[in-house]
Amino acid sequence: MGAQIELEAIGTVCGGRAEVINDNWGGIEAWIELDRRLDETALSSLDQFSHAVIVFHFDQVDPATIEWGARHPRNNRDWPLVGIFAQRGKNRPNRVGVTTCRILGVEGRRLHVQGLDAVDGTPVIDIKPYMTGFEPRGDVAEPDWSKELMAGYW
Image (cartoon, rainbow, N blue to C red; front, side):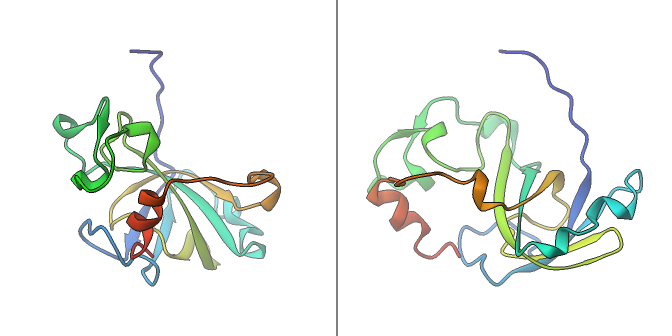
C-alpha cells in the first residue's frame, strides 16, 4: 500500500453510546476530552460556531472485516453493490470517520456535542469548525439508496 502515516489522537469521545448502533444518532450527546498535551486554549472561540467536523478512528472495527472493494451498504442486498469509497461505512481501509455535529458548548478541555456518531472511548484525530465556505458550491447529487440508508440515521 501507499506511504505510512503516523497519527496520534488529540482527544477521546466520552459519554453518548457505549456500543455501535446504526441509527438514531441525532439526539445523542457526548463530549470530546482533549489530551493533556493540548492546552485548553486549543478550543478557544470554537463555541462561536454552531457545528464542528469531528475526525475520528473506528478503533472497534476488527481489521479482519475491512472492505477493500465493493459491498452492499449495510450488507442490504436491496441496495446496489458499490465500492467502499462510494459509501460511509465504518469497515473502510483506514477506519477513519468524519461527522459534522452540533456544538453544545466548550468547557476547559471539553467540547460538548450533539449528533456525533462515535461511541464512548473513540479516539479523535481532529476537530475543525464547520464553515460553509468549505462546503460544496453548486448542486449536490446522491443516489436514492443513500437517502434511504440515512432516513433513520439522525
